[in-house]
Amino acid sequence: MLFRSSYHPQYKWTAELTRGVQQSLAAEIESENLYIEYMDQRRFIDDSIYDEKLISLLQYKYQLNKPDVIITSDDSAFKFILEYGDQLFANIPVVFCGVNVFVQNVIKNKKNITGIAEGMDIQGNLELITKLQPDIKKIIILGDTTGLGLKMVNESKKIRQLWQKTSGVQIEIWDQFSLDELFQKVAGVSSQAAVLMLAIHKDNMGHYFSFEE
Image (tube, rainbow, N blue to C red; front, side, top):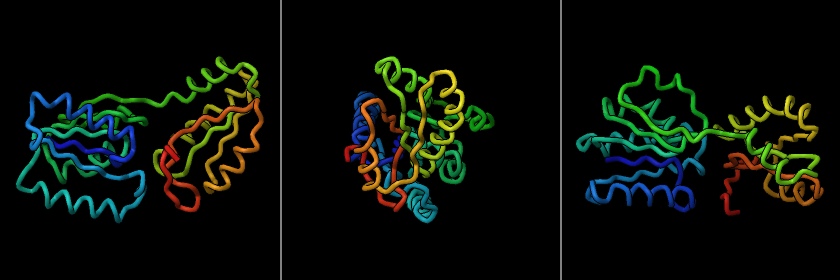
């Protein structure tokens, strides 16, 4: 079995998800038969050269040792297997999980693929913020312009106009900033504002930073 993770094991979400897969399959699969591949896409997001090297590596590693089943976690690994799965792992069943931006049509003509969509409830989070903090006048949504971040920012823009009219709460979307600029801007935010963080991988200087940071 092959487990394809979108990110890297230093990322807590990835570490916990990987541990869950290992524990759940321990009684069924010997540990040496579970192959784990980390795509490290938080550091190498939207990098076509890196993707090409991953394809070459996987072709070499699994040409004589094809997995029986592939599990993917999060959006990047799911997108990768949709684009290159037939080339690398033809006719091998795929189970996906943790996909935020999921469109049903992408698997419509795909055989042997199933999974769980995590979803992206931006509006639900806005409603939760105003419920928990009824005096809020402004909500700042943080995102970036990389693949997943851009999809979430675009979804936020669709929600913003109608939400402002019905709730009376102003929505600002910040997706262009260096990390230092972000710290300075957030330091000046009033107590009647809240911040909702979407997917952020890099700042506008191309610098990667972790969720912990």
